[in-house]
Image (cartoon, rainbow, N blue to C red; front, top):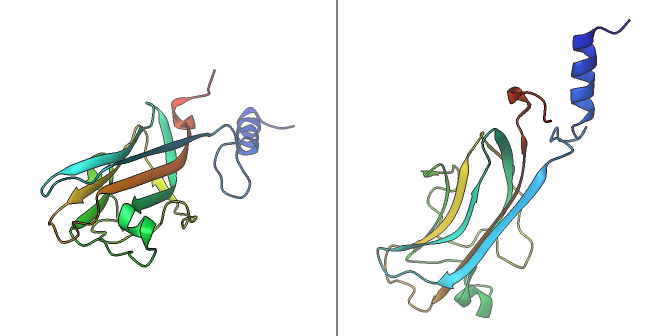
Length: 157
């Protein structure tokens, strides 16, 4: 005879992907923006997503763009520009001091798998710290991930 708690655990396991453990009812987020490059000492918000209360998730991809890179794919260095991924206003390790294009927008980017705690806010920004690359006049950023209800708060009705 199956005990009630064993049935609940078995049911909970069946609602997750057997490969990654992410709940089968997870939802996607995909936020992006292309904007004028910021002035020296300023930053521009390129992507923003807030997980709902009682939801956690995973950041799966991010992508970057500059018009200089768009004209010449060898221009991966972005001197004077700093790329920031923030979670709850804190820099996300290992992307804490990025000064080049790691994941070019439009060419397929490397997947990341960074856990996002319940109710997190993810932001992707470009900051101009000097005028070493005045030819960069536009920047873009994109974040993609998944989020789901945290079962620690009880069953979804």
